[in-house]
Length: 173
Image (cartoon, rainbow, N blue to C red; front, side):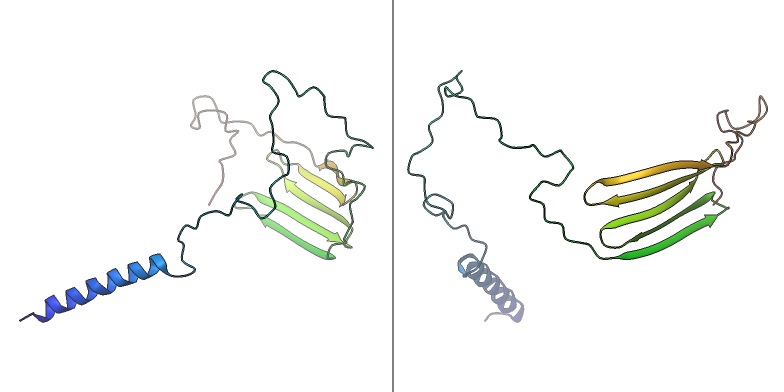
């Protein structure tokens, strides 16, 4: 007589084998199917490709493109402009404990984006970037600086810090 454990083990094994076999032949499974006649959905060419003899370019060089060339990064003559979604946002971070001081604000009418961002530099100045960007001419920035650069005196000779630290003490978390 078969014990219950043996019966359960045999039943689970047969179920696993049946599931594996079904997955191999089930429609829609990941089974490999042979490719179509030419491997693609378009008809084969009437004249098969014949490479040029080695060391030759086939006897003729391709003609240069006709008409004006598009400048890289600029939209082509056939570009159809679709205006974007108008937006406006602004944020600022001022945290003296970590020496973080920066801000950004921008707005758009759907075609032209204008904005400004400010960053507190390590030398004490504030870098201000005012910009405009549009689909036709790209990004244009005007960079300016506010304040005077300050370079604090470093630690005394023989002191801690190994030099080069400027005595700023680094970030304080």
